[in-house]
Image (cartoon, helix red, strand yellow):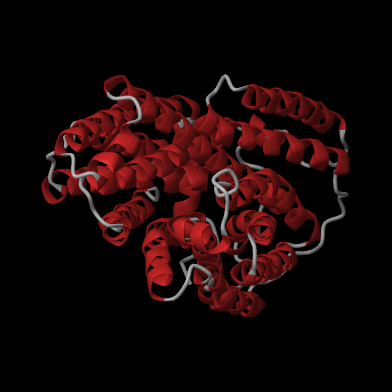
Length: 506
């Protein structure tokens, strides 16, 4: 597939009409905010859920994992459904499923029903997420309108990720853990009502690739499960290895089917475009950097600096500030520079921020050391994310916008899961090399007022986190190299020129 398909096959320049771009963006942004909130809002409620419902230690992680696994596995399927049957239609179905599952989870009387509801939320999210991004690609004209819409999309992702922890703490503390799920009900209903502002594309004539859907979904499910389990039980664990073997077999069968199918779930021509495949690889690294850094930094702030959960949530809010600033600046820069000229330096800036975080000690100050490094890291990640998102959907034909967006979402989700699992493993190994069982030792030292044990444990945990930050910096340098090599300046420059010659923004 070429980087610039014929004009008649590309997404329309303004399918919603100038008058409706504002309401359309409001609906799209709110839907994205709701989904990203759900990625983090439940984490802080887990202790309360454990106490009230009597959830076992082995079942508790599944309140998070059920959502992550189903969401990641069904993204390609959800994106293709939107291409075939209409993005607004599939988005609405996803919103109904997600909202109903949130109500079920909030009212659930036991752990089994709550876990089932979380899985059902994942189904709804997988129908919503790729079609939200595809609607940006097919509704907003190339150039400033689409760039601005992508900036809002990135900003909502950042705000949702950071506000989720804080909002989860407030709702759990002031009301009940049930409200971390029930809060989605009014938001979901409002977004559902607002979808009338979205224009439905014509229904396509292709057929759903059922064998591809089964093997692709099964392969992604096994892959995400293997990554999640590997981070918790070790990468040589028999079940972990088995999950990766199953994933490899199913995904190999899936790719073989896609070559032969007349109407494949994943048109492989999408990956033949060097810029697009390079942007997917970059987003894999960026997704890992975003979530792994956030996860480890939150632990450092709580365990080493001894911030309360709510204060840790407040301390994480600058993450959103960094990404929102970067989204606004990168929106302007990509109108004049090739995407890789914006993204690659941004990723190097983020690597510098992580290197700064790797120098933290047990006595580091949040205001003078953690905060500026955090802002630098997420500013750089934001500078990398927005141009690569634009590159991933640039030049995609309208009938493939959903699956192209789903590939981007899938890369981000797998990157996030892999980044957290790998860097957490590195952190644990480094901490254990200083003091086996450092986390438990810290809790026992604080509970027993043993300052010596607490100090040793804090030092060991700090060593673990800083080692992981250093490894993360190295990964982002690799990501910058991928962008520099895989995303060609010449093709990207043509995209920039097209962006600068479009009609004025509404």
